[in-house]
Structure formats: C-alpha cells, structure tokens
Image (cartoon, rainbow, N blue to C red; front, side):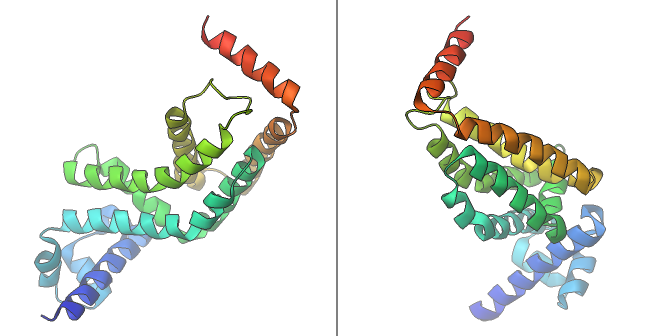
Length: 213
C-alpha cells in the first residue's frame, strides 16, 4: 500500500475511534465498530496499529494534541491571574461541545487496568502540561506574591489538575455551577493582579513565613 494511502487510512481510523469514544464510549470501541465508522476494512486496524488498544492509545493522544494546539495561542498570551481564569473559562466553554476531553477521561479510567492506555494517558496529560508550564513561569516571576513560595513545577501540576479536572467534571455540573465557580475565582484573580509592589511583598513574606513553620 502506498505510504500516502497508508497515512490516510490511519488518519481515518484514528478519527473514527475518537468519534466512537465520544458518542458511544470506550466500551463500544472494537475493530468492527471503528472500521465501519471509517469505511475501511476491519483488518486495517490490526495492520496499522497491531491492536485495538494501541489504536485507542493513539486516538487519545491525537485528540488531546488537537485540542491543545487549538488553544495554544491563548496559553501563550496569558500574563496575569485574570488572564488565566478567563483562559480556563474559554477553554471549558469550547471543550463542552467538542467532547474530546471525554476521550482523555475514559483513557484515564482505563489506565488503571491497561498499561498501554496508561502510557497514552500520561503522554496526553503532558501535552496539556507544556503550555501550562509557560503560564506558571510567567505568573511566578520576580515580584509575584507567590515568588519563592510555590515551586513552578508544583504550580504547573496544580494548574494541570485544575484544568483537566474541571473539564472531566463538566458533565455533572450545570452551566450555573460553572459560572459561579469561575466568578468566584475571577474575583480572587482580580485582587491578586491589583496588588501593588508593597502589598505583593507583604503577601509573599507572610506566605514564606507560614511555609517554614
């Protein structure tokens, strides 16, 4: 099979897997359901990916990469705590209808019993972590109220957990619940961004003293 045709077949199989997971759940994924959705022969699943598990793993990473790239410019523009909260709000609204975060969520559940899916879920999480790391570095610059208080790597982990966790719990929250949460955090972000140099040093000093007790 010519390389171009092979790549096209792989792309269609991955897209079909994402569609099945989004619409019917990971338990509905099989060589048959995916190949039918892709309009390809069932044997191509195993020819290109070796197993359905490896296909699901690839779909998880691909779906996540597409969503991260979609929002990358916004991540790079975030320069304040207010920017971060607004970014989270916009991402949540965009992802609500896309359904791709549910692919990662299902992979995280499967990761507990399937090492292959676990590796893919870890790789997918790292895709979110990279742009969040840049945001964390900009927020913890010299003069920040959290300078010397929070390790950038730990702060990145917290941001990633918050971003992913908020997306994964979206199905069980109403829009009003989400708005209430974002409004509360946005108010705190505005307060942090509005601190002057003296107040920032005072907050930072208090937090450092508290940490060493």
